[in-house]
Image 1 (cartoon, rainbow, N blue to C red):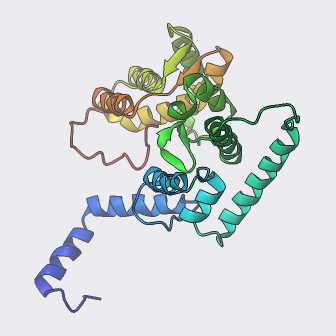
Image 2: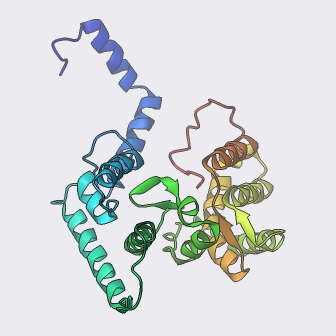
Amino acid sequence: MKPYYFSQRAWNSICDHWGTPQFQTKSLNGTKARELVEFTPRSGAKPFDQRRSEIDAEREAKGEMPITDDEFMTFVYDPCDPAVKELQEKMAQIRSSQAELTPELSPTDEPPSPRTQKEIQLKKDLQVTLQAIPPKGGRVFLRPNETLGEIVGAREAAKWAKQTVQPAPVDIPDDIFTIMSKILDAVQQMVRSLPTHEVKQSVLDEQVCNLATATFPDPSQQSKQMLYVRTASSLLLQVLKDSDRIIVEETSLEKAKGKKAAVLDNRGHNEGEEDPDAHLFPLF
């Protein structure tokens, strides 16, 4: 299978690289990631927000309204893809039901200004998108580089966070299952001790990791610590809801600092050191 333009020495070198455990781990992670992709982009390497801003700039120059999510989806994804077609049909049904509930302007009402009309369209468009595909990790479908909090504000984002689908049940080994009640009690006490009604995700991550470390302090019990984190995290959303707490959005910088601190404090890895178990039990 060696390409003709590869020297034997170069070919042997790259084959050795492909055979290393580090590359095998990355390859396995990539395979799993591709299996999770619902829609395959076809618009090239430019970020979605850059694509959208370019299209909107062209439309604004022509005096047209910004591109809708439905139109943008057919631009960045293959409209013949069955998954895309199904999503478009769902969005069309949601948009139709919204139109039935929207009262029409009476002849005496003044039409909205172009700016107001643009804001109304963007808001309706976003509502349709959020109902069709609820935000995952605070990210909005077709707007992956913007958090929901940045688009609609922290308070509105918290409302959507409560409406998102609950995570799939976690497979719990027997040694963790036997202490489920203790984990639940610990999570409830942790949430009740929070000083404010609104809490950042990084704070929750750190607190859950601290609970896991306190329960399994031995460094050799790292796998049990990670199982504890997964189990506690599966209980956390309901406990937050019962305790009238909400998760507020964080900036990208805050998230990066929080994840780095959690890894350094609770996993014991140095900066730049690869975690061999990261692909098995990702934190959040």
